[in-house]
Structure formats: structure tokens, C-alpha cells
Amino acid sequence: MNDFFIGNGIKIEKRGDRYYLIYDAGEICDRMEEIEITRKEADIAMKSSKGAYDIIIKYQNMMNE
Image (cartoon, rainbow, N blue to C red; front, side, top):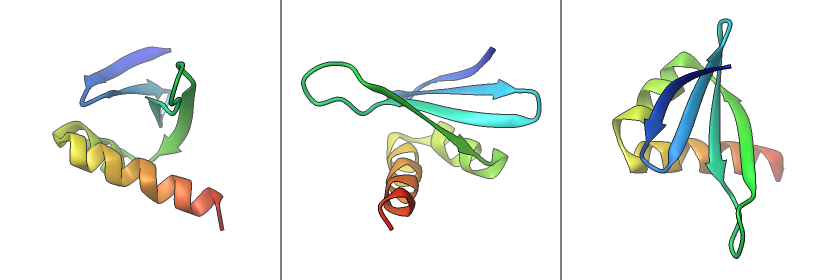
């Protein structure tokens, strides 16, 4: 496990050639969620909190379909 980026309320890990975005999805207590993302999405998430939020919402919406 390699910490690739920590900031904007998220952590991005690079494992081999895959990227994972880790974020706190809990409301009252910590509940860490992890989603696999692309390198392009990792770049977007690292640029701003809004970018990170948009990526998280995209994957949450995909899970709810």
C-alpha cells in the first residue's frame, strides 16, 4: 500500500497500476469507504475538494442505480 496523496478530505492510494480513493462516509462516527478510480479521476480529486466530491458522488450514484 502506497500513500499517493492525502488532502482535500480524502486519501488516494496507488497499488500497482490501480488508484483507490478513500474517504469518510460516516455521519456520526468514522466509516471509511474505498472506491477504485482512474488516474484521470485521481488527478481531478487531487486538484480540489470539489473535484474529490464530484468523483465520490459519481460513484455513489453508480452504486445506487
